[in-house]
Structure formats: structure tokens, C-alpha cells
Length: 222
Image (cartoon, rainbow, N blue to C red; front, side):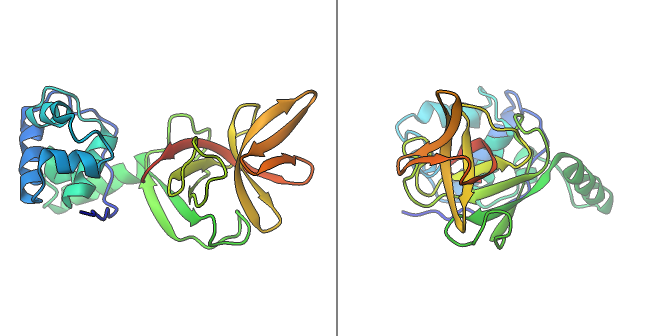
């Protein structure tokens, strides 16, 4: 069975700690979606036999963090507000929520690495509205859908990477580089007195490529 994720509003940066009420709504949403605990775990990319993890979430015994809340909402096709019990029916609450989103979230343009010519000038495929990762030094972030196996197993085909375009790259960082109209994911390595970009396709001299940014987050989905 295949599940298609859609983008929903992201929650504020809180942890819903040990909430029996949130857990009950989580369980109700799963049942309404027609999913068993094992099916939900598999769709979330987790071990389908580790049902204790999702059981503890549904009973409020374990924390439910914002990323998990958003993932459950996408899977069950509900809003995060409905899971945490926030009433947004009134105009005041709607306006307050919009204000909170504008303060805590940043619009991250999403590119497909094979669908644009040049990292900075390529056409945007979509936007992801999310809290910037804690390692970000700015809000100048972009996301890329990776195609290919140039940095397997660190970055797999179909993964999303979030790139900070203003972060200064250092040895050991995973970076995105452009070479003409081609874009690559590489690791920055120290070779003697010089830095080079390496991946499964080979080694590239930094004098012949442009570092577009540093990868600060790798995930299966946004």
C-alpha cells in the first residue's frame, strides 16, 4: 500500500509532553484513516514491529515533538491543530495563528536537482514552510530533492536536503556544488593543504566548481 503525503501547517516549537488527550486524538485519527499501528509505522519509515513506540505516543507516555506531530498529520490527512486540540474556528484565533506562523516559520523553496539549470537560478518546484533547523545560520535556506547515488549512503536517492546558502563550508561538511549547469552533492575534504569536493563520482577541485551551500539537514521527506 502506498501513502501520499501532502503539506500541512507546521506547529509551534513545543513538545506535547505526556499528553493523554493528544494521544487519544492521535489514535482516533489513525483509526479514522483506516490504518493499523504497523501500517502507520511503515508509512512513517519506522520499524513496523516496534508498535510500543506508537502505542506510547497514543497513550501519552512518550513526548510528541513538532516533527512527529507534523508527520502524523500528513499521514492521517488531518491538521496539526486538530491533533493538539487547538480551536481555530474564530477569526481571532486564525489571525493569531497566522502571526505565529509568520514569526516561527520560513518559506523554503524546493528544487529538484535534475529539473533546473544552475542551483541559484533554477525554477522552484514547491515551497516547504518549516522551522529553520537549529544549525542554520540564516534564513537563506533551500531544499533539494536528490536524484541519483552520488553520495550514497549518506544521501540516498529521493531524500530531501536542506541547504544553508550563507553558511561557510569547512572540511567534513556535506555541500552542494554547481559545475556549469550541473549540481552535485559532495563532501568537503582536506587533501594536504587544499580542500576538494568528493563523492562517489570522483574528486573535484574547488577552483573549477562553485560551492552553493552547506547541507544542514537530511531527511526522507519535508
